[in-house]
Amino acid sequence: MSHILIVEDENHLAELERDYLIQAGFTVTVLNRGDEVARWLEHNQADLVILDLMLPGRDGLDLCRDLRRQGEVPIIMTTAKVEEIDRLIGLELGADDYLCKPFSLRELVARVKTVIRRSRPSPTPNESSAPRLHIPDQGSQVCLGLNCIELTVVELNLLQLLMRHPQQIFSRDKIIDRIYTDRRVVSDRTIDSHIKKLRKKLLGLNAGHDYIHSVYGAGYRFQTETETEQP
Image 1 (cartoon, rainbow, N blue to C red):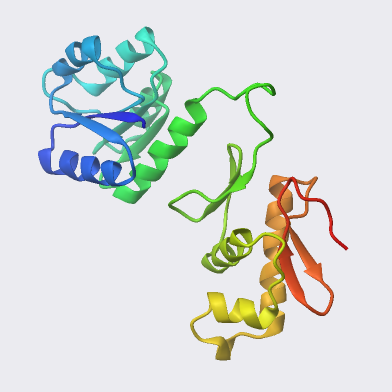
Image 2 (cartoon, rainbow, N blue to C red):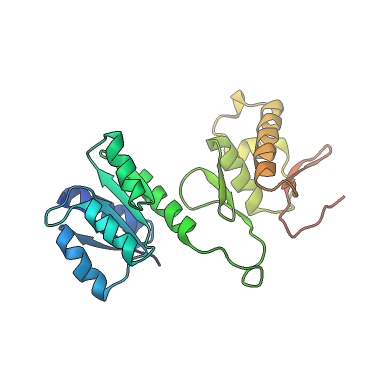
């Protein structure tokens, strides 16, 4: 479980960030002053730091500079200052990402997950098997390893349905019943169109494997990377 350090002097915002991150499965520590960070890091370790730019005791840019000198802990900077020069300075000092206030707390959680995922070393061939297609717990993406693409709501629901039942054939009528609340506005051609777009996106992630197969006269089925083509 990743440990997130929040350095934020706005107590209400810090509490909201903490609650959202805990709900997403992280452990969280909150500090309200910049001059408390070094002492905390002497006895603790963070997997990512959410660092406000304007802090009492010591400002975020100085802290970012020192954190980069000491190691490679990922840093997401937050600030109410929106000038381009501030954003560039923050990133040049080594911040991995940047959010301007006010920002969506869901976006913050998504950015945290993305930065942590990017910061982890890629496994060698002997350490793990080939990456598998997967859908993260939150958001609207599908990923193969660290590569992700955005899906529409319908595409996401469709892929989730097929992935839960690999090799099971779903007729168009069954797909309509499962992913639409009002089938009166949906036709077989609509399903075919969504399937075509989804297959194209998945081939963009893995050109060597077609995940969704058409079964003539029956419907569609999902095929994992390790499964071979069925007649």
